[in-house]
Image 1 (cartoon, one colour):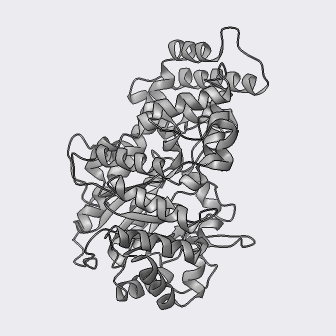
Image 2 (cartoon, rainbow, N blue to C red; image 1 turned 45 degrees about the vertical axis):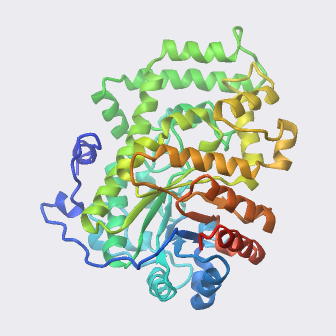
Image 3 (cartoon, rainbow, N blue to C red; image 1 turned 90 degrees about the vertical axis):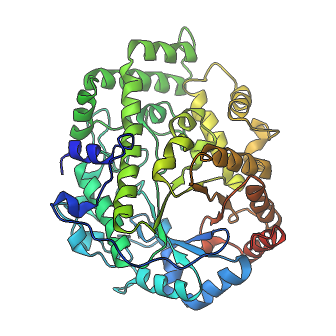
Length: 489
């Protein structure tokens, strides 16, 4: 499939229905007659890594989830090449699909069955066993497909799907990733969604990408600040072609990224620009308007990609629910918040899962402020920059910069962010299932407070995060008790 055809078939504004991958080969896409189990009331979701699903008694695990917290939806990391999604570290980790890849859905891509199969836990179909057992416990299964931020060295063919940075280098880790305009990645993703939709009696699929656009990465405006500002993406042949079709000069855009790289490296070396950081940044945008045009190209490409996946599955089985994990960075960045508008996501979203992890937010927000201080906001102290972000993002009383990492954010933050998401999708039927953090340094009390705050903010459901295997039993019980007190379960 040509990239131009892909974009035409996924244009949201045009209202064109995407009929499925078989349509690309001139075949009809028959509907899947299976329907997910009925789930009365709010969706109570719980992600889970693969290792406990492969090694422990599923009936015991699922009964525990239901008893403690009334879980109705399971979100296993069904396809991943990142070891921490699978479980504890494994030497020479390969990863892949922990179901059974049905190769008829993966046409014209460089990945083989061996490339896509996760071998760590034997040859059994783990996803298939999970789906069957979960249904016995009244739970629907939603494969949680979170994009790989590190290109697996054990899968050599995977590299051809990845982005190219402004210096022409193929990326192999965050902030790069698979390219949304690369037809190989488009075919792979559409095939994976179709495979799960046709091969398993699932309730839906959740996809997530913890990445952002090139300008924001180059400026270190990220919770993962400190990365190489020259690694901004994407300048592969497909993105350059799309840019030219939009009337953007790729070389001018590349030159603009080079100027940002100089600014950030100088800032990290404590070399203040003559006219200050913000003036220098604004001057770059005036001199290189192609920067914002290239930014818009990347953002639009991701949204078109998501719309394609949504329409593809709906053509196969309209009953399946398709939704998106929303990266935690959106909570800290007014720039990414402008690019990821909930209202505009409604036409291709049955649900959204904004990450509102208040108990790990401190370190992440501090990292974001440090990154901003090394580029656009170097004229301000970190304390002043944080206060500015609090005001821009509508935060209430939260900890100052020197206390934030040890204090984290309050449960009020969970309520505010949830309410903002609910208001953002109010014009449609999209539901908000916020991801609240009840693992790590969370306590039973903070878990209950976060769950309560989410529903006070108007959440339609909730996803207890971030992985069942790492959640203390007391925290899961506290979350369940909070929902019982609210009469959610």
